[in-house]
Image 1 (cartoon, one colour):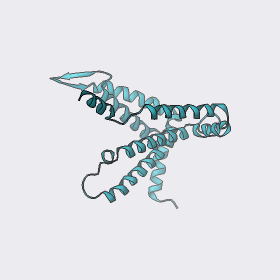
Image 2 (cartoon, rainbow, N blue to C red):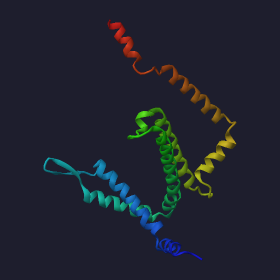
Image 3 (spheres, one colour):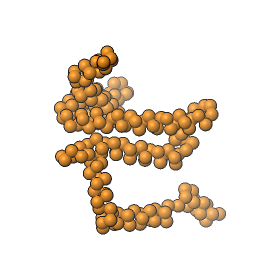
Image 4 (cartoon, rainbow, N blue to C red):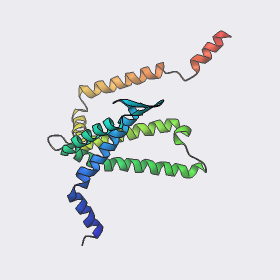
Length: 195
């Protein structure tokens, strides 16, 4: 027997809350925030202060949000991808909580105290977000883009394309390693030459 909360969720789903209202609010809020921050659609001067053109930004955000919810394919991609993105967010939050246990009292700034690890985690999270969206976007055959790319890699792994890509990456890595000098080294040589 379904509980009253499950019945309420079923009612909201039939009402279109998850397919129309929430995607509309999400896209509207994101587009409006970006337009307000960047002021690319103009600004108004009030005294000596510039403020964004709220009416134009709101109408543009409304139009874009309406166009997004008009496309059921985009809405299904958003509804598929966002729970997985939230899973990545929860994993990163749990990681920071576990590290925070061993740090001690006071404000913990992971990005300042562990900058290299922070950059690595940012790259991993970015790749995770890209993979989540590739998995959420279906092709015409019904498979996701991630499945299509994975199948292509598995079938073409021993071919000339991947061999060329690996050689190219090794060459780029070697060039980066040879040309990258530790920070501050050229300045020391310059100071030594001046003395």
